[in-house]
Amino acid sequence: MESTRIDKWLWAARFFKTRSLASDEINHGRVQMAQQAIKPSREIRVGDVISIVQAQIPRTVVVKGISEQRGPAPVAQQLYEETHDSLQKRARAIEHNRLNPEPALSIAHGRPTKRDRRDLQRSWEAD
Image 1 (cartoon, helix red, strand yellow):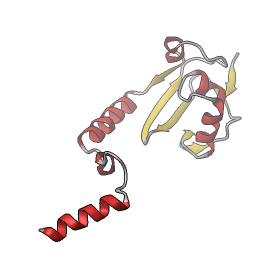
Image 2 (image 1 turned 180 degrees about the vertical axis):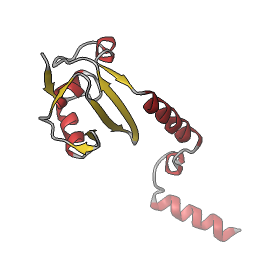
Image 3 (image 1 turned 30 degrees about the vertical axis):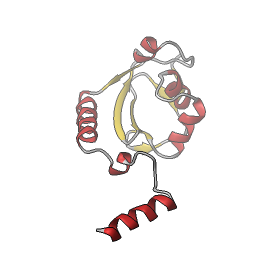
């Protein structure tokens, strides 16, 4: 097997849980080859360089093997190799996210209810 569809390969390499998720990400432009948008039916070969954005963290991988079957994680990790620059950028992005968390994530129970807002207003008026 010399080539396969990129949506099948992304699923087999365990970047996405299903082929339909892989296709959706490709259609949204979050998966690119040579900085160009592609279609899910695009054929990939060993040596191709793919850019993937997952959870707002970019990754650049080189295809090392072709598979159309999803196997165990250790086998899937042998299908690609992440570039050195990509590893450094990903580590910096993870560290940045750890040091600068999203402020909305600190809200424990989501938006305040009408009752919560009234209680807040009463506490401000009492001061």
